[in-house]
Image 1 (cartoon, rainbow, N blue to C red):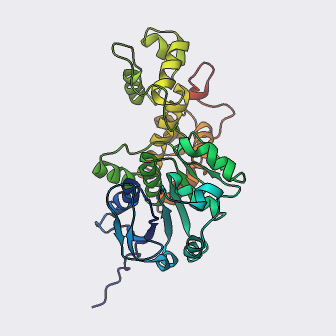
Image 2 (image 1 turned 30 degrees about the vertical axis):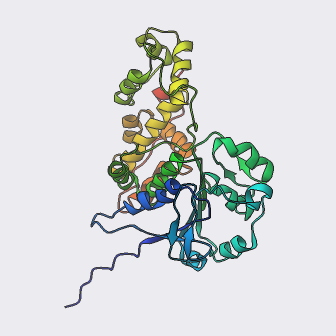
Length: 352
């Protein structure tokens, strides 16, 4: 008797390009993050393979080499290509031009393939022209040199990662984890990405626009911290929040509270709160059938208009479009009231 059940879709193929002088930690990020992503039946959602400019050993910045089974022809089979950092990019790093061997390898990539770089792997994408006119980032220590070498690229030296649809770049080291988790979240939703993060024992989400580093990641001994305030805020995201109230609870001035908050988190209180509210809205849009007004209230945006404004700014799509992507069977035809004024989170004196 034949089964009417459709066969599962083939796993999305990720090909990692290992170049001489690679950093082993960054080479392992795509395998670790994408390799942990599973569907509800426990099937892998990604197939991760590694290739070099030729099969064989690839040098690293450590005291060992990595043996790669595949040559550059594997790039022609990729749905996503990832280029990790390397310390031996030669003319790519010095003059912004590809070697003949590297150009020939990249020529295997099919049009429409998603391209991802980790740290200075962005030099390879830029030298190939993939980043011209696009936003991109790299390790903050290389950002100025990167911009001089590739003036056509819109370099943002401060963010963790950039997402321009089919081309994504990240800053150094751990930011590669953030970017790969972001891709899993974009491809398969918050629940899958959070499961990967739990298994990898890393934070489930850091916004791409978050600063690469902060001036004082840990407070000085016996100095007041805003850690407790942030914990309280997470429990009150659905309430109207005023900066003056937050500062008063910490027994400091608004100016002092704002300075400490930015020093410890890398962003202003308003940016931090908005980011957490967007994240809560995403979860509600993916996992519930609440109306847009209900989602807005539960996430702390107050009204559907305010929800739409902030979700559109953060994700580039409307809440309805986002829900349709992740919950195609859900009823998204509920009427959405768009009042003339925003809700309590955008009222005068609220946190921005």
